[in-house]
Image 1 (cartoon, rainbow over the protein chains, first blue to last red):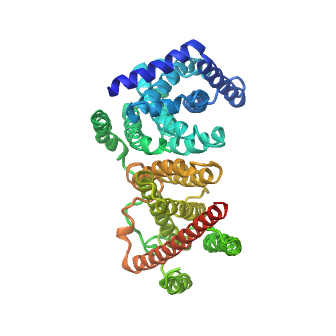
Image 2: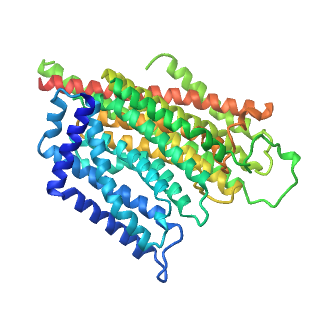
Length: 225
Length: 96
Length: 218
């Protein structure tokens, strides 16, 4: 029942998205323009800043993620479907997990475009160790999305919701972004320090555990009127 | 809920499996201070003037604390005025 | 206000008035000299900052799960005090760092995490002010995540090679310095309790105003 609910919600979000592709296109476009702006701002004499690639990649992910979260829940608000979801006889944590996985899938799609682009524009060998990179991106995205989904869902009924989402989200996800950047940067070194990569990855997984647990626990009381 | 609990347990186990190598990595020989060292036991060195920084720090602390107390009292007086006004109105109109 | 408040306030004032003399007569620490005396105010403020974040988090948790408004008032008071003591810590720290590390700011684990924790408390207040109805629960959710940040701040210096002294320094202080530190900690704790009580009182009076407004309309 629980997993079935999660799957249903995930499928609903993905179906809507595949049909309209609104959030996917706008998110990816926004992320690409972010990266281009950084490129114009930071490139000196045709060369990008050293070690800039990791930071810029994660900044683009977090900006694009905030946008995607805002849009995804705006859609729910317009059709009042969030209230319908909460009224349905489904366990609340399942609703949260379904939305979370939808957001993660969306961001994963965006990262599929962003990583090669950053790798190309900043001459950074991001795709050298795809396994490690996937792990770092996945755990970082999950941590960011875990907090983001919770707050975006809470903000659906609040005033000034567009402004408040960054205000709420960025201070809490800064540690996740830092760990993601340092982990990715460690992968980009000429001689990769495997201990360093493993350390940052472990930290990311710890953040994920804490954030997902807290979110699952507080989703129900936070969404009740 | 049982599913949630098992998810949580799995996540916690996964993160704690990374803790030992993580600690091993981070516990590198550090230049940081491990214990207290008294001043007299070290040689004299060239010094920057410390007094302005010290005074500025203490002054800031006092200002911040004082400023906060004043802010709270101001808000409190505003609330008290509101209260007396409202209580007067209630007595007048006989409501409440 | 309870009867002990005024007496405690006088005691607190006296302790703070005495503290410059207490601190001035302590000896200097190696390498850092006179500017080390900022430590006697910097450390207790940092502890109050962390304590306040934890109080806010626990009160928010209890508010979310019980719906009791008194917990919410506690959380708001604690959040404001977190911002206050966090600001004191984040200003006295760089003033000390300029002399002892040669730079105003450094992105090490503890400072960064403290800045993040401070910003979370600040955003709590922003959400309460501008979030409209339902912002009390929103902010409560935020505070819980902020509380999860606190242990990270405290133990980070033990795990990262950082310029901040490790947590093993305080227990190794010689007696003539440690009693001064604990005196300052006691003053700050007393001050914290007083400010907390005052701030909660303000919230209680505010809710009385709300009740009266409702009574007038009803």
